[in-house]
Image 1 (tube, rainbow, N blue to C red):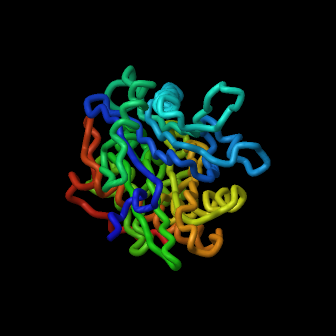
Image 2: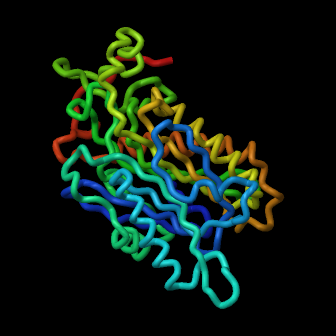
Length: 335
């Protein structure tokens, strides 16, 4: 039975480190036996590490973990703790000549310094602790890990944003192939249920109890965009047990962004650093060679579900209310 989480993919473990008081945190996706890795960066303000080596033309084929973290550029330090944890277990790219291994740990960060305490950021110790906590069981969601300080709906600034968090989902398709997604949603735009068109979480109106509807506000008053703050970014990981080449995994990462477009509006803005990593563990060896179109379509679907769960499972922190804390609902429909 599936747990509806990315850990339903054989070979994947997830661990969090969370500072509720700050709030901030980091989340590690471990694939200690190695997984073919890819990435697609669509936002215009990314904070990343080791993404160039995921290009198909480059040497390294497998990664051993992906690290998502708060703390903006400072949070990239947490990846060093993941590297140390893996090195201690001799997991990594074989350097030969008795030199040892080089753990391959791509990472990306989101901006959460404007909520709670700006001087508390995930560091190497936090990344190490997240690895220590990693399991292949159900994944904690909401205001935890990389989603601890995440908020959405920033058109009018942090004061009118809504608390978001981290979500995950999975789907089993043909031949025993499983596709899972995990995402920390810290978007400039609103989270929208793609089935109903209703806003789930986003910019709150300053006076009237309702959602401001970021898309309509921007279209109705273009001067409103000058209030946008470059303090966002949605970070995600999609994984599958299918056998895929490096080129195919990168295609899956690209298609998974469609899931963000389904559930976040607007998305991939100048104020976001939206980044999605993709992993193929190859554990479904009895299945035919994976089809990136089929798997990419499933990846978009589970990514959209994970975005919705990130907003719905979040709890209010540091003065930012979550959707679950609010009594109003959207009456608008974005089609």
